[in-house]
Image (cartoon, rainbow, N blue to C red):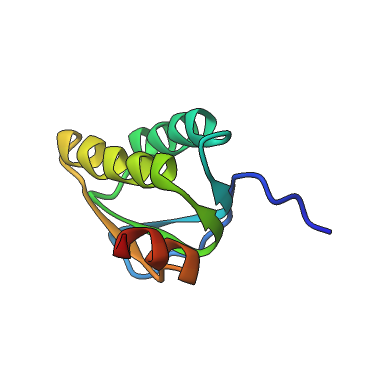
Length: 98
């Protein structure tokens, strides 16, 4: 069985001038601090000013994870980057419907 904890997986470049970051596993209270650190570090190192966070491989997300995603959007904006959330999994959609 694959490790269900949070990880960032390799991503293909969706188009020139756009970076993609694939989030996988889960972002719950237990993983939130580590996920926050990894995502913000990756955003800080990303060159293009448009970044896509792909959420399709997130198996679980709770309110702590949603807060991490919101912070990633705000951090990207503070760095002059446009961060977009795409391909949300069912668990991601479920938390945003609450």
